Image (cartoon, rainbow, N blue to C red; front, side, top):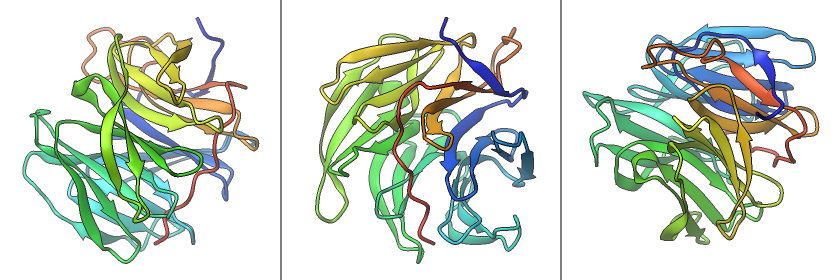
Length: 281
């Protein structure tokens, strides 16, 4: 078993989307089915919890403070105080919700969707800029999950969980992905959320796999973190030097969940992360 610590003991149904907010020195994460955005300051131990009123797939920091959130019915903004809510892009689709999301190097949000029944082709990956311009980048997706970029921004990594793969794209001068191909096939559980480290390696949480795997840019599995919970959902580096790997977990759908299922875990000194851009909007 990997040496880990309990950052936040919680009973989240579907913990997801850990994101280090460097400006505030805190980790942001969500409980999708609990309709909650959580924050955690590891220096002080301070926590906050904000209700969103509908399922929330992801929450990311904004350049001027506040959050951009990927909700059931679209993408919305909160002000620095958790107020001043407004829709940036509202597109409710019956039976569909927002899922994982990521901020690209240019400050745009890449927001994934999925059907509640996980039907193939029911989800999308959409690029949204700060002025509300929307472009569907991928359609025909089942469960849009982890998205990340190489340190030089020239590669994009992506997970559509039922494929059992991490895919890689080339990124053009327009910031859009092309030439999709497999980076790695996962043989344990399903690939979920991911992060890219300073060496360009891809870390992915394995739903029903109880592990986090690291793959080199060549697609070679070179590190395995074994965790006590069977449903780790996503991972991100945080802390002042971006060396601690935070892992969100889930308890939804488990008849006898581990006592730590739904908690936020951390593996101190796991590696070296990349500074994450805030949403430019």
